[in-house]
Length: 450
Image (cartoon, rainbow, N blue to C red; front, side, top):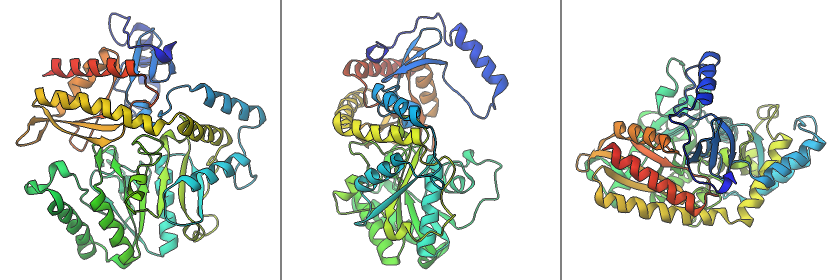
């Protein structure tokens, strides 16, 4: 079965002839701005494996960029979606109630570690939509116009979320942007100025946040602070718990809501169903949580969860949409939660993380280009540098490694504000044999690229 197989390249070059023909058609039919960097045209996918149209088999460590935590084509999700499709595909939430929407909202409200005894949830289609809706809720509840976001943040590509996203390569030529979005420094502890460590580093980043109130927006005009518990596109950088605790206290002091963007970190990836459960274990809870990506195993769906008084503050007609909470997506989402529990996938994420981190640490003892290893669970970043002392980024090496790995049957991807981080986002259903094979390919690609 493909699900249990290992990477294998059978064509003399990549892409193979059939894949190349389809890639050529893509180049003529679709915008070049939607770039595909990999020589792969999928024919089928199972678990962590992809077979292309030429019969090449690839191990996928990107997972649709964090969408496939339960893997490609999970048979039980397929069955759940087929059962739902036999009854109906769609029932718009503003017109007709379908039980799947209600059941999934109940489940997420129960599980999400947000403040409040009575929580509510509703659905949109993408991570960007969820983040934009979370901002709507915060503005409606507080009556305030502004939000604070961070360097390295990625929140989407809608007009508002392009403003919230730090990297402006994703927004080139798209202005003017909505006002009231202010940015400060995320605690990137590997690159603190002056080599600050410990509490001194935390204090530095907190002071940068407080400076927003002096130089950009007084706190009484800030509706929300929006943060990823572990930055994805920014380079797989975890938010330090000491910093999160201080941000929560700052929010409480000024009546600001704390929004946690769990679009990429959610659904078992970090060793918890939601990464902010690590916060909860330290007595910290956000006010609003957004989720997407792996929520429905690849069917477009996203969610916003908050306590009742926040949800009920938004005026009728301001939130909602045609496809949010589609019946097929909700059926998949309910099955994903069941599988997360039954198969203990968050725990599996921790096991995977231990294996990967051990191998990375072994490489770091031999290879001076490895500057930092960081992450939570099975969401791990490997930062490559030209010099450990200066920490000069090495994006050229990352590009070579990504290309060589793909040609050996392993799909990996870069991240980070300097493009010098290789991200690990393998499906949590990956087998031990596949994990070992992937690490061998990765090591070979890395050492041969130096």
